[in-house]
Amino acid sequence: MGGPPDQIFHSLNMSWQNTLRVLADNKELIPEFYTDCSFLINAAHCDLGTDHLGVKVDDVELPPWATTVREF
Image: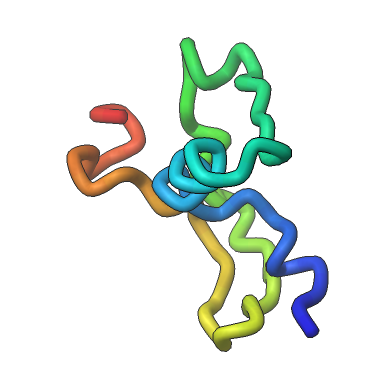
């Protein structure tokens, strides 16, 4: 039954795994990925809802090796 929160980009790792497994799941990186990754943070604290598992959607989840957006 998922809704819009399930469709929001919220995990770099999940998106990467989907592009490897699902041929129809193509991604195009925006220029900010190469310069300023602050767009990965929900700085305005917008209520983005919860996904179908009941997990609150907020900042984009970084890969395990990156502890901060700057490190990513």
